[in-house]
Image (cartoon, rainbow, N blue to C red; front, side):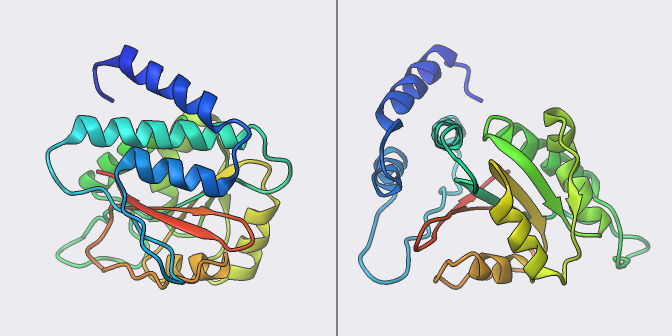
Length: 222
């Protein structure tokens, strides 16, 4: 997080004051204006992403405001989550030049898992779901430990059960999955836009906002 904590707190207070009682449509407009995302017309929702540049303080401040705003919405949620966070597992460890089917995380992957915990610690997450593979469980572990949450393991092939668990969650949730399972899950949650994840891509942070027509936000974390 940036060092200008006073400025951050002030921005967050204004965000909370402006967001309480607003609709999700108004909330998305707020996000677009705050994060400088361009919105386009058409059936598919805009998929915003942070630029890969060196402007880390501003990017982190924007993400802080986004997470704070989502947390405000989470406090008013009755039955289903207001925000569903989805990430692919972090980088896998290789052994003797090959990657075993159920390996844990590499040092880079463990560092990314710690960064994820820092980014989402104030996101109002109440439930965490992983697959049966070590790499997803180790990616979720730092955040789960900091929040005191026991992640629930659901088979990567059991999409129906996972969707039901997500919809029944009382607050925001985090799902740690795989490059081939996350696009299927996002579609099952009602997002019309097609999502693809490259094999070398580990930094996607997807946020699904459930409503009659689910909306998708696509960010990146380091």
